[in-house]
Image 1 (cartoon, rainbow, N blue to C red):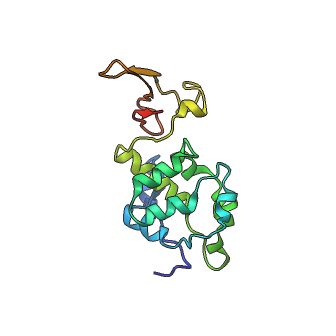
Image 2 (cartoon, rainbow, N blue to C red):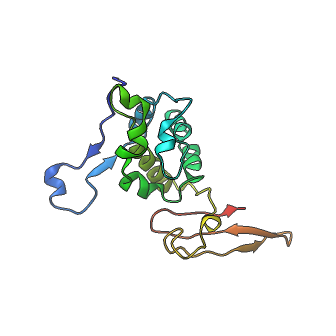
Length: 180
């Protein structure tokens, strides 16, 4: 592997994509994501984090992807971002996190956005719960998880009230119970 070059991202064939409205970029599979993550040099003074508007701990989540710990990578991303599947697709990484990537000084920067997208898609496909109480960041029902339906408390078997947030079937990602 040439560490100066990105791992290419699979795309739909041109003839196939001319007949549908699906995403052109197919994203990484787990092996490709782990290989791309291994390109990160884990800077002590990570400029990529400074370039991220929501300050995702990029080297930490990429380290987890490199080690195959995708659920932990998702937890790290979720501490800062409620919409990693969206941000991994539409944020202008080339002028933000990837634009600040030290690896990019000599060679191509790490594909941070594609790795974020992979982690979010993997979490959705593997039913990994979101670890952030979206209600703590925003009032539920006004866009926090794009019109999810929530409840705020539950009583457990011992008549103890537990603060929980349960978001069901949000269109970007599914969120399971999150204990506060």
